[in-house]
Length: 144
Image (cartoon, rainbow, N blue to C red; front, side):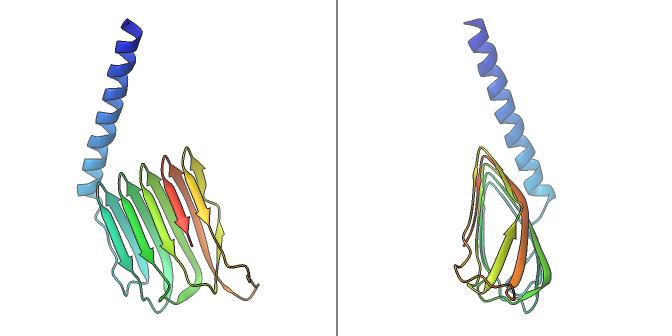
């Protein structure tokens, strides 16, 4: 019984620490970016961010979903050469929609989470390339 109580107290302390750190991060790291931004720095902590981007030369940026979710529609954006996205999730999710003529190259990893990247069947070498790197920790990343 003592071991179970110790584990329960440890688990409660760990969750409390995660929640306090997330609450601090929500205040300390603001989300930046709007529909015409060439670079995004989106942060969703305990909430959600939904954005349709229409950039003339989208360069990429970063996204962090911590106990929250981010949904970005890039189907109306034009891709700049060398565009890169850095994605991080912790108990959250990121959903990105890309045009069918973009090719997505990913080095993202998942730990107790999932990553789904669907690229069109007609990929060609001349397509615009979006490079994605990231980590899904107890969360998910979907690019379609």
